[in-house]
Length: 199
Image 1 (cartoon, one colour):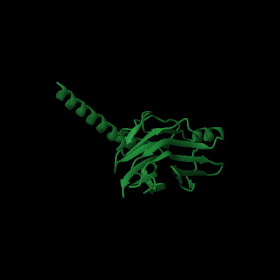
Image 2 (cartoon, helix red, strand yellow):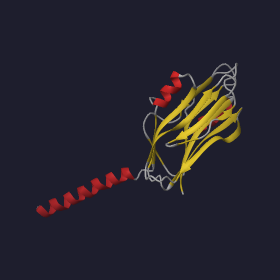
Image 3 (tube, one colour):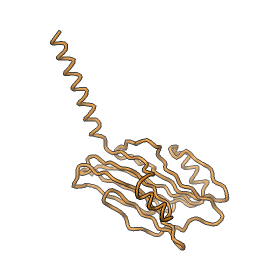
Image 4 (cartoon, helix red, strand yellow):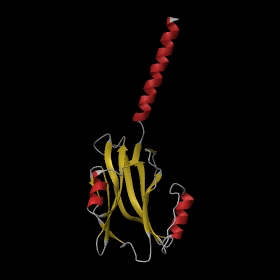
């Protein structure tokens, strides 16, 4: 009886340690952060739009993060990297913090910038939006729960768009066909994307 108890106990401990190690070996996680200081600052100062996320990258010393914005106008790709930020091979094993896209609306121009934990891209001029005859909208493309990210997968994180007229419809941003339809239907579409690769 004692031998059976020892075997069962040993198996149970191995199972527990395996579960604990599995959590430590997740590549990365991301979640929407609508209540961050960054978001509050943008709202209080009426600066524009901010897509902000909580981001955690394990094995940051071996991985590279690419964050970029694709631009489409009237269904056609204008730029596959309107603005981009690449960073990686950190001296730290784990990198975590805020990651996202800010769009600042000035009177005569718009500026966009990307940022990540301890890095940021210089703001760059983008098309002035919004035109008089259109309606604009922006939304996160991931759900409210934390998303586990995989190596070499491209993730759509957020969308800004302007309609061709005075109405705008909603799309399922987690459905690739719906995103393609949105690109075709709208006048201007910006897609915020992320990919993690191993270096």
